[in-house]
Image (cartoon, rainbow, N blue to C red; front, side):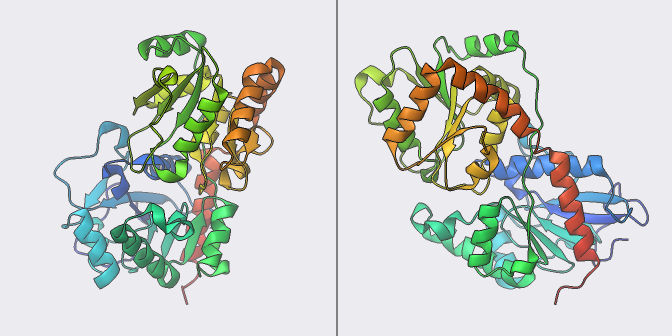
Amino acid sequence: MASGGGDAAQPPGAAAGAVTSCVTLEQCWHRVPGGTARAALELVDALVELARLPTGEALSLVGVSAWHRQPPEATWRPTIPVRQLPLPRVALYESWHRFRHPRVERATGPVDLIHATGIAMPPRSVPVVLTLHDLAFVRDPSHFTAHGLRFFHAALDRARTDADVVLCSSEATRVDAEAAGLPADRLRVVPLGVRPTHVDPDEIAAVRRAHGLDAPYVLHVGTAEPRKNLSGLLDAFVRLDRAGVDLVLVGPDGWGEVGDALPTRLQQRVRRLGFVSERDKAALYAGTAVFCYPSVWEGFGLPVLEALAQGAPVVTSRGTATEEVAGDAALLVDPHDPVELADALRRILDDTDLAADLRSRGPARAAAFPWSQTATLTAEAYAAVLGASHP
């Protein structure tokens, strides 16, 4: 059915009469791909499994990116074909937002709709669906560079005028999007998902040995950046001051201070593992005494859902999207209060009944967030924009 104009061939795998969605996947090449890349890749796989729109039409997907000499690292490599436009990332984003050029069809061939899975907004040659994970740059501009703020606000301006439907990862993000001037009737809450992975005790033990984790540990997973509140977590860990318990930080280096000033007696008990494989990460979730995610603001909080799926007792922030994700399966704290955070960690470490209760609640809560649901809601949005013209 592909209708958008272009000078490239029909996307590979697109059957006659199929609806073709062009999915932006540039974040897979970012220095720190992070949760937005993982979410895009999981959604793509779930849409491929879904295969059809609610209308019964077959669904075909093709990715689009900036120009790169090499594919992304294997962990971040899409399972669908990705076509490259002839500009590197910075130039492409600037050209998209300022000049509304080049169209994605130059790389992909004819498509029926564009799905911007990151905030960068391609030119609107066909209906556009945007996934909006958060508006952290509006909530606290101090966490971003001047260049970054210009880019994000330019993208937001384009989203207001060009996005037919905006898929918000949480109700919290939907509220922020409406406050930022995105029309309420174009906003849909489409939560992210999780694919539970069974990890047996032998694998947990092997991963712990591989990383030298002999003691019980409190775990944090995520890119180091100011809103993740690692400084608050470290402050709480100091206040906890629990002999024989380590703090394990998993995830790539990002930016901003993370509070390195620790008492000498605690410095050896903070373990920075950096990036780990998805399989190792699942085992680390399953083996932790407590998973702690005290972010001051999230658009969703995928690590919280991943931890719940592995039965980890979770401590996370109230008043942000992670509260929506956790429901009654976690202890909720004020992320700005390290005393309350330390008390929550202490409660779980000291109360085996509480820890066991949270371990049983987590997988049941996570089961409410399958990627198949995300794909179904996304396909419904595709069908809606194809059935109605943007005013």
